[in-house]
Length: 474
Ligand SMILES: O=C(O)Cc1cc(O)ccc1O
Ligand SMILES: [Fe+2]
Image (tube, rainbow, N blue to C red; front, side):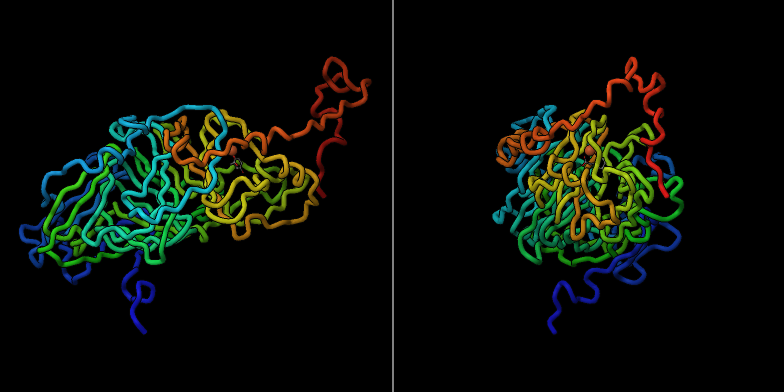
């Protein structure tokens, strides 16, 4: 049987654990013992440190990795601007990527595939907040590509950590620290600065990216849930060291720096790390492993119970970005309107659909590869057809989201939309409100007049007055 990317015994090998200190060597003995930067590293390698946090970041936040490589990352020509007339992922608005702050609920039809693009050129900034040059905020991008990156090219973003959410097609990501294969229903994080090359072993790809301009993702606190649940630490996978040996041919190193593209030349492969140890590395996670927790009595809980990863602001519990999923799950709540409630939020909510159907939007307008944005205090909730179904449903235990996966990038920041996201992509639905909420009918029926005295039923505090109105469970 020929060795393909999918049956090669060693091509995708991972080490498990979130935030773990990992060490890995592709050549036995390449990792120094009891030291980080020996005078003469084994096998003539160079020592190099990659810092993902300030040197003096507190120990529990500190992230760095030591690399043992054939040539240092600095061995390249000066960077030159590339595609400066067209490439713009800069939210500062050099050309057309300025944030438009608008209160409208927005929804996008599925974003198009674009088979003419490679990974680097496939990125489109749709929305976000803040500024990578200030290391503040986040960017939300769409990618759609059909071409492998050049075999002699590598790319990194200096702007932030890339949380990649594939919607279609597999990404074979060769990173400096090893190889990762990511498919839809999995996610991958490539931290700031890590050089990578993306090829497409199963054809065209499309998906979503949250670029975190500040901080790093962590697992959410579990509180009373206890020591297991939601995304379990052992299910996060980091690659093992894997290197190429090419110190002759010309390579191009692309950098996204403050949203602009630059390129430099070097006459050796950037993927020459023979061994590494540390806690700053790319990793992947299979969303199918999420341990979903929900109400087993009554009421619809906050969606924070579905948080996979969170990047906290300086105010604990308030996120710059939460990555939340809506996986297949059982709904059993009694006397409950089971879909999400009608809602206004001080946080902004950008949602996307990977596949299937989202339980708050059964009207058909929220489609796989499509997205929606409910910004700070923009009112939203189930569409009219969902409300109609859910308020009359027989409340048997019911599985929702079978073969489905929606997600949310939730942020405490007001999220602006770029010119591309608003206009150029040509995907914004004009009938979102008209289809979703404007058809909602009033169902209010005033109780018999005798019961109302000064706005209070029977002259007492209305809400608790009539115990027969309260739910009771047997
Ligand atoms: O708006 C949405 O669909 C996301 C969402 C889901 C949920 O279960 C509760 C609140 C919420 O904002
Ligand atoms: Fe919401």
